[in-house]
Image 1 (tube, one colour):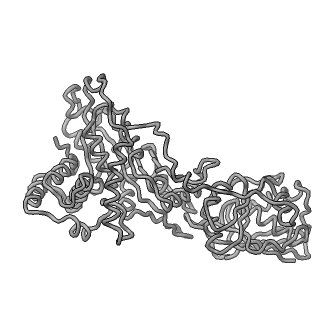
Image 2 (spheres, rainbow, N blue to C red; image 1 turned 180 degrees about the vertical axis):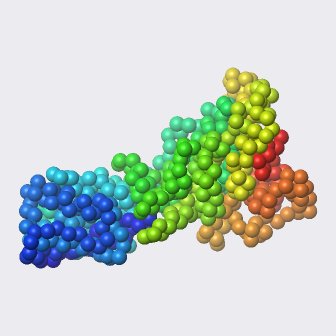
Image 3 (cartoon, rainbow, N blue to C red; image 1 turned 30 degrees about the vertical axis):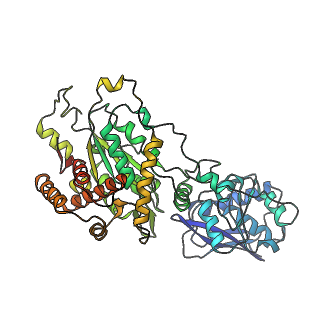
Length: 512
């Protein structure tokens, strides 16, 4: 006999429906799975066989063939265990098959028939809704995650017998519900706040400008100046996510298996801080079936690289393409996948190996050649893609020991959201543009018109600093953001002068 069960699989961060066909015929007992099954899918026959017997069902001692259609796409993961088991029970007449129509089933089976969570529940629920399916059945731990998808009934189960009783009409399954407005209102508990940072007014201003325009930023200063402390507070001043951003971020975390248990939607902008020993595959993504890397896990948030020159040069160079395009494409012999990677890069570094070059309080023991060699670890093309280069000096004692009240993150965030609102209005007819940092030269010519005075300032700065064409465009973008923070439509000499100050490191030179 033949039974057909609909399931789903993930490809990149998107999902597609898979027909699980179970055929039982007379012949020597065997259990084969076809349709390009990989790894965990092949091993699933052992889990399914043990789960059926231990849950009180019968595994037919006949020739069993499981086909996963479409058969020309590789299938990976353990989510096919439950639909394969249901297909075998329906094909052998142990459960009713009438309720399988318009139903998507997925889940990993334990050897006792219990259901375990799977990766990618959210994109698979979205695929079920797009296909017009009536409901989706999945493990109970994935219920809250899939419940954010409206328009499809989401049902959770603890075990294989529970699913069978539902299909036989003997019992119901709990439905998932999600309050999207409450989930979208979630933010961090402000565990880290800018009010904790003493002094560093210039650095706080630069981070505010970076957040307002989604600009990449590099902090350069001696050890203990507060570079890491400042960078970790950057997500707290970024604008709140909208629903589309939250869904895309949640899909990436779900596929990577990083969504916390019980979390329905990730409405907080991510902050990723990989160690400097990370590989290029760990940063960009990789594997035989490519998984998302740190640049994709930071999508919509901040990627923080501390001690930037300590990263291997080949690792840093792979950042150039996603920083420009906002996506990363991973090509392998069998498959090519594209992951979103629109992130803000926040990096920190010392000015020299000992960390005290240019510090008046501590002598530097590095010679000029050593300093130049150290700075050269970060290539010029990569520096050009970082909009803001800021020198962060050590904090004087009068700032550390004072009783002054520092501005909290909430106040800075309000100004940032005001600037972003002006940008949304400006780019409302350009769906691909989200912030000033993403403008192309054509948009710069349209929205960054220069007066003669401003043009003279820029001409002088480019000549003296030796800025590249890309760095020139970065200065214009930063100037546009500074004007947005001030609520002004035209670029003034003050806006451009402040933007030029944010290019303190160029082509491996520390500018005083």
